Image (tube, rainbow, N blue to C red; front, side):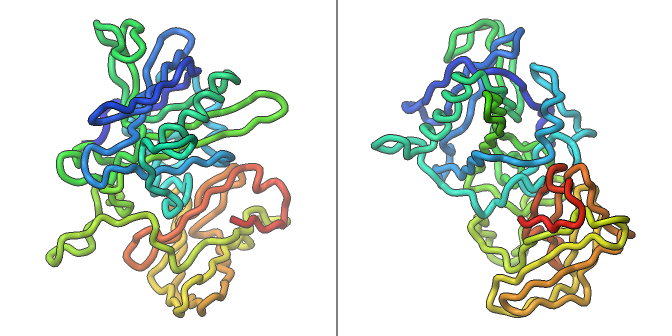
Length: 344
């Protein structure tokens, strides 16, 4: 089914509170969009084992999506199901190449000491956003307006946004919320002179799968009919990675663009059945390519199957099973100088 009213709330933060004594604790943020008050409820602990959330905070986030977000009006911007696709503003942890999922780490929501748990990490950036009047973009599912006052910050009517985490790859009672291009997350645009930068925070439950169906967002069980699938973790190292791309060749682009791959494993890898896919789902076959251990290979693009946009985009590497094993993103800035190869 997926999330019915998924979207992004553009707002300013007023206050942040760390919840500790709760069966399902959240980091709570009081925000305002210029017209209404909202509460952003960010999960910091799972209700089922393993309890610690996976998180990644990118303190210098660069992705072509940020240019699109700047044009949004303040307030809640619903993203219709028909708009939840590559190239738009909807988040997808797996397909959007926002970050490398194998860099996510599990962290308790509360630990003795200072600046060492998930609550405190989130609070650091929220307090900075309050002090600098940064723009906050919260992706998730809204609730309200309610007839009663908000239970945390007491503004009325109560309203807010939750599901600020990956919303695919779930099993059991949470599977009904699965979908593609509907993941939650928190992006913050700090614009105080002389700095102008973005911070992105992404969250997932350890029980979720990072291999999901391209239509439903449900987990892909590679062990159907045998032993029950152990939930995969993002800590698995990919054998082959995308390390560079010639995005804007000198002169005419067609037939001159290329992707460079490296085999970081100790084994030779046959790329028969593998493919490179861009944000428009254009696909280039890697049949005929082999990579020796520790070696790199440059894959020329004919321009007939895959073209690299000079406005920014994504590149994903799919194995012979159609599973994404690596992905990168690039911005318009990366394509400015002709003939230069961009390193990832």
